Every structure is written in structure tokens, then in C-alpha cells.
Amino acid sequence: MSVRSVSTEELKSLLQQKGVKASVQRLSILRYVMENMDHPSVDKIYQRLLPQIPTLSKTTVYNTLKQLTDKGLITALNIDDTEIKYDFIEQPHAHFRCLSCGHIYDVELDSAIYQTQTIDGHQVVSTQINFKGICNNCKQKTKEN
Amino acid sequence: MSVRSVSTEELKSLLQQKGVKASVQRLSILRYVMENMDHPSVDKIYQRLLPQIPTLSKTTVYNTLKQLTDKGLITALNIDDTEIKYDFIEQPHAHFRCLSCGHIYDVELDSAIYQTQTIDGHQVVSTQINFKGICNNCKQKTKEN
DNA sequence: GTTCCTGCAAAAGCTTTGCAGAAGA
DNA sequence: TCTTCTGCAAAGCTTTTGCAGGAAC
Image 1: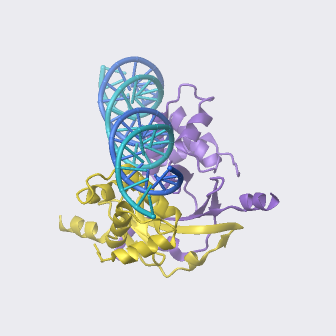
Image 2: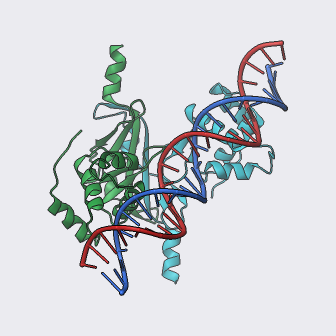
Image 3: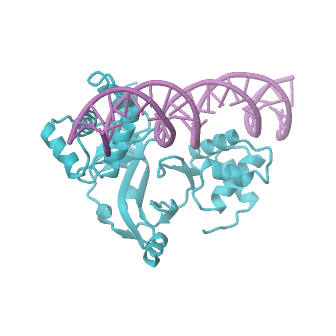
């Protein structure tokens, strides 16, 4: 899992650009999504931040994620059947979900699809490409047994 | 909304090929998905079939749709945030969901993406391409006002 | 008679809402 | 002080589960 480090200044600047006031909760939630690129669910973010912010409530996580999504800072992924997963918006990429272990991988596609702005007369705002199947890891494990 | 007619014989044959026994409920549910290509939710199917099958329960709709999905007769779409939508499987196509009216359109894409069988070493079983935006209808309405 | 199917009721999850107290400007 | 944010509790929805009665073969 790729992890990086984002400065508080950068986080504040991102929020400010979108007209969202900074708060401990918002900075932490945005930082989590940006640093851990693991497509977290609401519950995962909540569980991981609880030690740092013991008074955090899930409502706040929901509120914040919705707000960040509305402002275009993060994306809500419809790749899972049961939960919404979140992703920081960088360059467009596709996702692969393993039906066996449930892990979601980022996938680079040099596809012109992302450039689609109009299709059948409909104005495109966002594009999601989701693959499902068996990931490399799980395939190896099956072979071993 | 495109609507077509599917014979009971054809429905029975499709189920039989997949090793699913025919029943009034299963035939009706599969017929609904095949004839009305409107990407229905569980609840929509339930509501529409209730007049014909007054004893129908939602559990049966859930069970049947899950079974038909497992057998590969229909697809579960992860395009909506709140509900699962179902689609009969024909040739591969993408979907466009209007953020204003919520309607889901079938979209033809002559893309090689559908032929992807392996990506980054992961074995692909299914591929979904989802666009979101403002549909032609809603765009027209906005202009008129 | 045995097996599979159906449907009611209840439970389980995820997400939203209402509201009061807290924090911040 | 006034506005905005936070968080608890409760409610709302979709989906799943357990189980008993019913249908089919």
C-alpha cells in the first residue's frame, strides 16, 4: 500500500481553495484519504482516526466526506456492493476489485475514455471504470494449495 | 424506454441452460428484466410484479436476482449510491446516470476495454464503465427556463 | 416422501436526520 | 454574540437471515 506524507499547510490550502473551513476533524479526514491511498470506507476512516481524535463521531466522518466529495476534492467509488469507498482525486485511473479478498487496486489505463465530455448528447461530469475479478495475490495462493 | 417481448419458452430455456428450475416467480422476474430494459431496482421489480403475483415477497425478488446474477444471466450495476440496479446481459455496454433526474441510459462504446482479460496481472471477470453527468433531456429543460 | 422454493418476520448494516452543546470568529 | 461545526441518539432504508409452510417431482 503506497503511503505518502502531506503537510498540514497543503491540507489547509486545499480546503481553503474550496471554501471549506479547516478543523481538526476535516484536516485529519482529508489527510487520511490523501496519505493512505487504500480506498477507505467511512468506517475504516472512523476506526483509524478514533485513537487520535477520541471524541470523533461517524456523523462527522459522513458529513466531511460528503462535503469533500461535493467540493471535488475526493471521489466516492461505487465499486463495492455494501459500502462507499473514497479516493483522493489525482489523475484519472480505473479500479480493480478482487472478488476473493475484496482488495481494491488502482489501475492505470491509457484510455481515451477519460476525455469523453459528451456521450449520446449527455454531458459527462465524471467517469468510473471498474474491473472485478481475481487478483494476482489470490491467484498465486490458489496455485499453492 | 425500449420494451420488447420475450416468450415463456425462451425464458424457460435460458433458466434451464443455467441449471435454474423455472417457477412463476423466476420467470416473471427474468421476464421483467429482459423486457423492460430500464435498469430496475429490487423494489421496482417487486412493485411491478405484485399485481400479477399478489403473494410475492421481496425476499424472493432478492433471492432470484442474486441467483440470476450468480449464473451470469443478469448484471448488478454499482452505478447508484443507494440501490443496486439490474441489467440483462447482452453485448457489453456502458451506462450513463443523470445526476439531475436519476435516469440510467445504456451507452454504446466501441472500446477495447471490454476485451481486457488481464490487467496488472489481475484476472478480469467483469468490467463496468459508468458515466455520470447531466442528460440531454435535463439540459434542454434548463435551457427552456 | 423428499427436496427445493417461497414468504413472513426479524435482524443487520450502512447512511441520514434532528437537535443540543461546543468551538471558533 | 453569532455563526458554524460536532457528536449523540434515533430513525430510515436497503439487504440478509432464520425458519416454517408450501409446492413440485
